[in-house]
Length: 252
Image 1 (tube, one colour):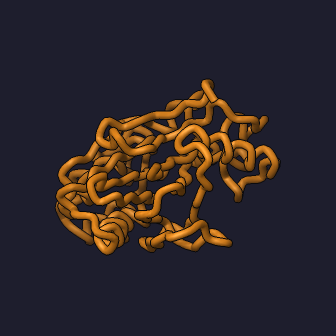
Image 2: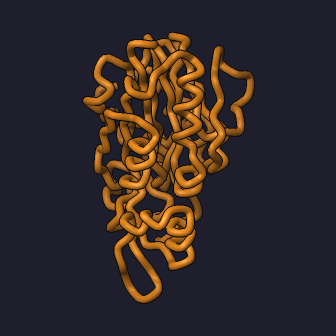
Image 3: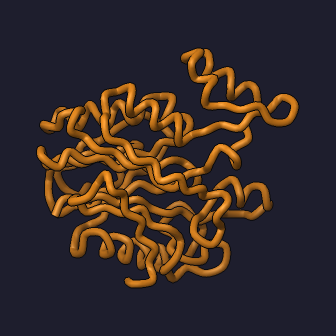
């Protein structure tokens, strides 16, 4: 497992977790590396092996629990590994021995923990989920299990950076209509376009919800091809498919 790229956050020290890149897997071609996407057109056996390696690197022996992600604000509380992936974009638990995983390929993976309460969460925050409140749903579900917002630490992993994320004016208006103050997450680009800072927006949503310790890793999935998969990069190149990386958190 030594060749896996497991990125840790200081904010989550003491909790088993990791944001994994594409290095160290067995997939080939467009999916080369640690592609964990069940919905990709990769060899299913390679994806299964990559998922096993990822879970072992974070919480050895634990089953990996992931969602069928739908870009929603829906959060599911997990008490045991489900028979089928729930249709949702966040998971929380207070049960040890399970590895909660979120897949991304430009969206922001958010890992959360109240170490004192023994409650963890993982959220997939693309722009739709972020503005829809997926992090708020995750915090509320964690509270139901005994967590306290003022104790929860959150880390935002590799995602597309502002310099790589050009959007149109309709996208920008959607955020500014939700809250005029959201204009600060955009900078003007070419005519009719802007650059959007997804990481800063997710950080803002967490802070506004009462999370006091937030660590944003500042890693750009689009720009660093050797380290991360990127949906937008693949789209710009006209590639037929793309890989997904994973962020995992668990209670030992």
